[in-house]
Amino acid sequence: MNDSQQMKNKVVSRSERTAKLVKMAMLGAISLVLVMIVRIPFPPAPFLVYDPADVPIFIGTFAFGPLAGLMITIIASFIQAFPLGGDGLIGFIMHVFATGSFVLISGFLYQKNKTKKGAVIALLSGVIVMTITMLLWNLLITPIYMGVPREAVIGMIMPILLPFNLLKSGINAIVTFITYKSIARFLHK
Image (tube, rainbow, N blue to C red; front, side):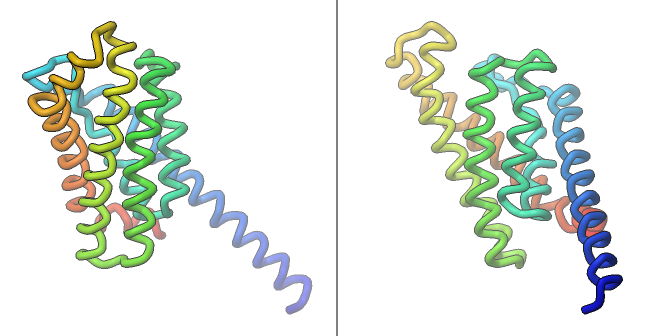
């Protein structure tokens, strides 16, 4: 390979990386807009709020891989928790661990099998892992955050926390499944 060909390959590679970063940033920005405009309280516990902000992150994970999804998660979580006035350090940590667990497991599984069946398995696995992660973090953090005894949180698991976490991650997984292919066409241009 001659020097001009190597230079051309470096330029193409650099512009492809830049395009990927721009698309990831765009997905992160969409996530932030969604968390600001779509907030639906969970009737049994209005302090729990559904938002579709993870959908662009999940789409970015399927399009660019689990590490890209984790990067989008960390940046979006930071902006939600601090500049947008979210739940501060506790909200940041919980969001990174919850969404991060989803993107890592579903991203790795989808990378290995990029079919509809593979997507379903990856998304279902993500829902299960995210739900378990959130329940564990709720047991650890919620007593401190809400100033209640751990027993009170344990009593909330079956009637409130489990259904909410399954619903939130499940709805976001379904929306991701429905919208991914049409959005992926743009992301892979």
